[in-house]
Length: 164
Image (cartoon, rainbow, N blue to C red; front, side, top):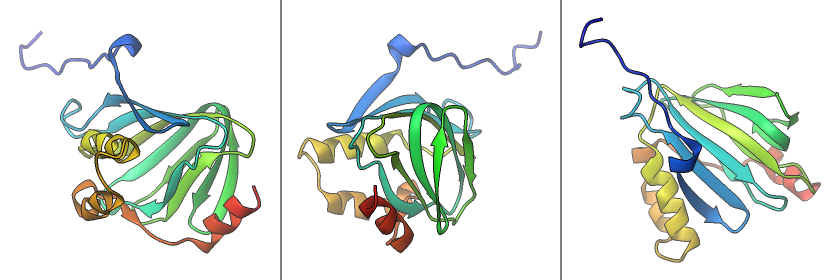
């Protein structure tokens, strides 16, 4: 076999970096764009009951894919809010507003993929620093273009959270 053949990427669960962006949310960093030659970025979001999840946002350069590994997830896609269970899959194309959080009273375990890959691991580390008081929400706002994470107000998501 040629020495130029691509190699597989293996990330052992015991070796994956984890960051906590709050007391009820853990993000396991699996593969960033540099490790996948830009093909994808992957993380696992473990959201405990009561986690606020992600606020409404959109990306301009990548699709985001959510695959529910366990539990129950509420997800905004455009103006629709869906409840997803284990085995459900949601693809959010670029520019479509979306958000997600565990369904009321439930936990959610979600595989999150971006394609093409975006260098996002430092964004998740920034979220952890904000949760620890080492950075500010303004730092997140200032990084929106760099990490292609654009926050917006979504009445549909706001209403869904109030009725949860």
